[in-house]
Length: 135
Ligand code: NI
Image (cartoon, rainbow, N blue to C red; front, side, top):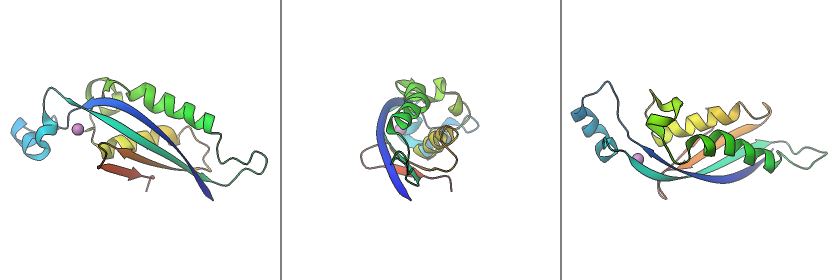
């Protein structure tokens, strides 16, 4: 098995809060991230695909195919969007880095050959990042 990876990025705004909590409780748990006027991040993404090398092509996956899936499922869907207000997956899901990584994983996994394993690494800041591989 071998892993190939591609980097991507998107800018997006979000607010961390729960509709079913008071503003005070949200403020206590989420602090500045609960700003009702939202705030933005430059998200950096690493998409890693693990599988066997195809004996005919020498590829795990054609990187053009991977690039197009990232563009459709992540960049077109999230870039320059307000995640809370404009991305249906976060209508009732707090758009933390953890939840964004899981949403990206689920969207992309359904578009890949089932033989391939997927891992998503999402940087919310240069120092804070999360990794999800469906486990
Ligand atoms: Ni934030």
